[in-house]
Length: 310
Image (cartoon, rainbow, N blue to C red; front, side):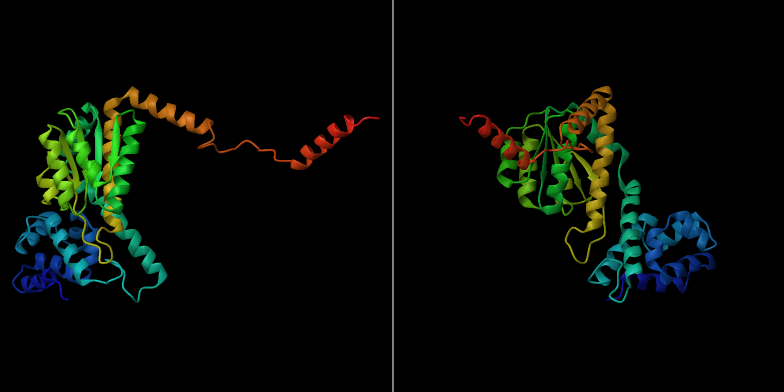
């Protein structure tokens, strides 16, 4: 399957100016490399400027490089290898390692360009003020994220729960109050049961924070949207790159919450660490357990001998 984006680039090159033609030529030559580059890097390789790169993207029908990259990555995912968005069947082990790592690094670095500062600050503020934070999810990957988010908030001293069951999500939503927060996680963002639980929580006056892609049904039903787009994975519905991106957003949000809690968070985290490190759970050096049964048997024999009548 030929990418429509690449076809459009080839067509545009015919009438493009010399400076823009050099940018288009680099994209056609190695589209995957372009996905990994910034405005400045692409402009430097093309011997051009950032404004020229921007105008080139507009010639192709996109507002900027970011929107162009998303479209290109989406089509490459659909038309690429069935194994991995970057890896081909004939790639050797070093190439597989390099491509998978580059894909993960690119996905994580793309969070900064996509994550709304205002949205993540609003989410942190809402969580700090919340009477309780209930985390909802659907699917294996998102369920892990919900449990991880709950554990992080719990360690910070906040009242938090993770509900992965549809029935329990509705019970949680029905018991929400205006000071409550629901943190809903879904990359696809279209599961009807999750949307229903979110709607019930909002009807109770709770604030709903959604970690999902912009434009999904979940995003439309949320008060605060942490919108992150990741190109589709050819193997899994929610691929590893989406998993890493969501985990990165959760880490950012957790740090912001801890900052707002200040000394309370520092004391709480220090206390948890101290308890775990001294009570055998996270101890680096475990005490030696003496299971010398031979010595115990000898002791018993000596006692019996001492008690034997002479």
